[in-house]
Every structure is written in C-alpha cells, then in structure tokens.
Length: 171
Image: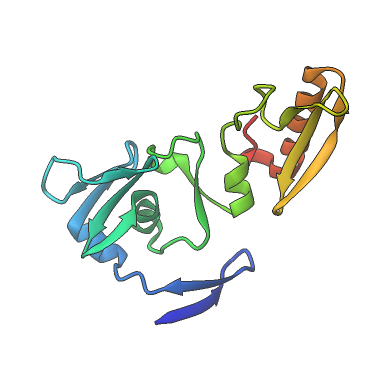
C-alpha cells in the first residue's frame, strides 16, 4: 500500500511500506557505526554485495542498500529522500560519513565529470576559444561565464558551488 507524506523539508513523498522495522533489523543484523559494516547477529562474517559501488543486502527477502539500513538502525526510521556519502565513497557506510541530502545536494558532492579541462564545471568552448564555467542547479545548467584562463573559470565554478551547495560542494 502506498502512503503519501510530507517530509521535514516540505517535500511530498510517496513511500512504500518498507517491511522491516528497526527492532527487526537489530535482531537480524549488527551495525558497526565506526566501520559502517553490517554482520549477521552473532556471526563475524560480513554480508552483502556491491552494486555500482553501493553495498546492498537481502533482509527478509527484500533487497536494501546498506546506507539506508544504517540510517534506519541509527535513527529508527527510513530516510525520505537521499543519503549522501560525505567523502564521496559509496561503499563507506560509517555513520559519520552519512547525511541526509536533496537530489541536488547529493549530485553536488560528486567527483568531476570527464571534460576537456580536468576541472569540475569547466570545459573548453571551441566557438569562443575560451574556458566556459557552468554549474547544474535544480535540473538546469547555468553558465557562469567564459574566461581566458583556466584557473579563473575554475574559481568561478568553485565560488558558485560553495554559494549554492555549501558543505555539499565538492571542488
């Protein structure tokens, strides 16, 4: 059964019944907040598999991403929205490395895309023969200007990213 709810950021969220509670999770699995590793309760062997860098595991015949299970384990509720890995390492599920994020914030905390400059948010514009700085925000690409020097374009991106994304900006 689908439920609709307004989360604490004001977003309407559809959610499915998750099928597992914090109590059930704690009976089946142990979570080490320092290492971010889940183990079967009473066993030393870790469990799970990697999917695009994210750890996931089966619990009660349902597949879960372990960063979301870590959130349930520590807070008692499944997160609405996304969970960001502060250091950008998708397999590092230590509690200090996890934080709630919007889609935009999570995308801001990614490594640079492959481009002609080697710098995040900067590419070479063949038409103007200048470096173009641009940033993605709210599903839109915003041009920050064209520059003669690569460093100036990179600085423009860095300043915009800090202003828009704050602590989530990865430069």
